[in-house]
Image (cartoon, rainbow, N blue to C red; front, side):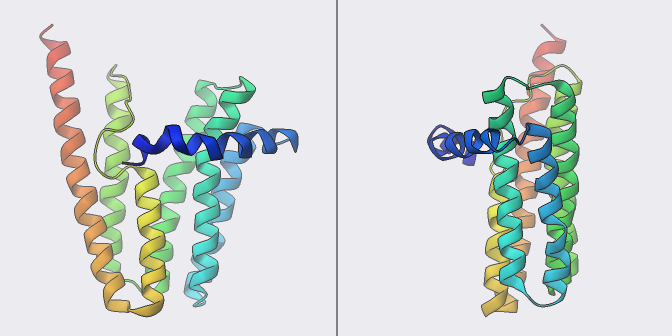
Length: 196
């Protein structure tokens, strides 16, 4: 969903990326900082500081949105950087869901959502490994959407634990739907290539 807004979001991310470059940050550093900022969110959630956890997850997500822009603007985009970005993204994803469980959200709902979210990312990576172009915008819930949804869950937990549980189940459902969407899309694309 957020991919459709990427052209507009670049009006914000591009100046921020240029600012990071002026401060001496490269794309790999921004990528690693995204992971580093996510880690304390687990402790803060467990210690019942949800607003602080929410802030760190937001910063982590923002840095993830910026590392690609930093690489593009500086002309340093590489397969090595893409590998680092993808790997740290999966680690940060796991941390976000562990933070939900540490906060007190239904652990079965959170672990289900986490498993499905990682599968969403896997479908794209596997399609790329099989020779398909790893297209963005395939499926309802992309990574940025899921991060925003997790932030919504944390904010809702502050006011209603039950609402947070319902929203976590909804995130799992939407992620599962996205797995199905991507699986069908990439299966059809691979079938077209196989019989071309």
